[in-house]
Image (cartoon, rainbow, N blue to C red; front, side):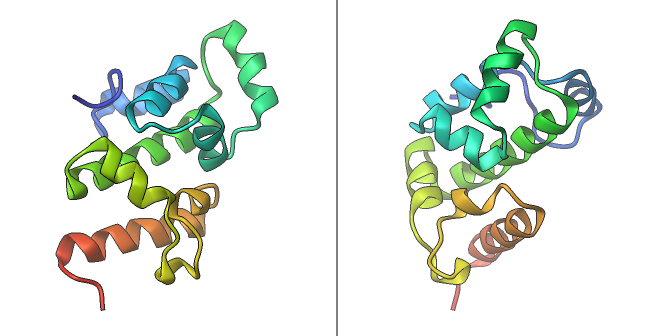
Length: 132
C-alpha cells in the first residue's frame, strides 16, 4: 500500500499547498483504515475535536491548522511503518506504552509540539539502531 491518498510526506511544494488549502476530511478515515485505528484515535493524536470533524465534513476540508496537525501524525505513522515494515506493526508500536515517553504511547503524545518532537526523536533513535 502507498501513502494515504496523495501525500508525499517529504516537504514537497505539493504537500505545503495541500495543507494551506486544507486537507480533505476523508483523509482521517483513510488514515484510520490504513493503520487500523479508530477515527477517534486519529483525531485525538492530531488534537482535532470531534465536533470540528462534523463541522468540516460539510465543507470537505480541514482548516490549515488542523491540516498541519494531521499531516504531522501521518508523517510519523509513515516513518513508523517504514521502520517496522507494515501499517499494522507501525500502529501497534504507536499505541503501546514506551519507557522513553514515561509509560505513554507515542500516539497519545502527538497532540503537542513537545510530544511530537519526543516521538520523532525516539523513531530517529530506533532507525539508527537499538535504543539503550
